[in-house]
Amino acid sequence: MKSLFKLKVPFVLLSSFLVITTTQAQSRSIHFFGSYNRSFGNITASVSSSLGYPYYDEIDQLRNGSVNQFEVGGFINSWGLGIIHNTYAADATTSFENYDYNGDARMDNGVLSDHLNLKFTGLEVLNKQTVFTPRLEVLWKLAIGIQSYTIDKSAQFSNAYYSLNTNNQILKGSILTALIGAGFDYHISKVISVGVETSLLPAKYKKLKENGTEYSIDDNVSRLSTGLKLTLTL
Image (cartoon, rainbow, N blue to C red; front, side, top):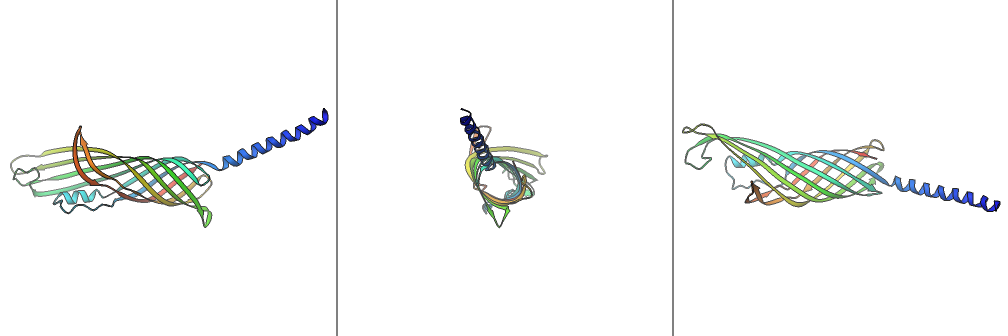
């Protein structure tokens, strides 16, 4: 009985050691991350030449904006799954003179103002591979989600017959779309890495709403973004 007990003790200890070692090895292959990306964004579609003064100048300004991107998720070895939230914001202001803004056959002077906001939230799949050095990784991602569109439009105008008038309009919409991205991450430490990323997000809207009223439009706001990224990995 004593000899049997002596045999069981090493076996139990060995089994416990294998379980602990396997668990630690598995835990090392699973990493959680959170990242922030600050980018310059550009709407790739050109402004229609059919738009005349001053609308062409106003819309053209909205093609360049700022992008903020947040991600959280986890990796198992080289494959990851996460949630991504990406926003694009652009402002435009255009002054005009001697233009019949409201179609009353009188020449107006005024200012157009627009604020465009695009918000994409989706589920992403990621893949990373080490290149050249263990500290450097190349990263690819594909995300599918919903992008909301909001544009706040304002126009102030006046002429010799009446004083200042203001027109305001807020149009909204949403579509299902995808984000494709690629970049490099350099690990400063096990926890902190910095990098650069480029992403493409196609988006074309056919309808927008204002207070429940639907308008048919043709607005292509597909955009390309490039910027710097900070990532924390646990």
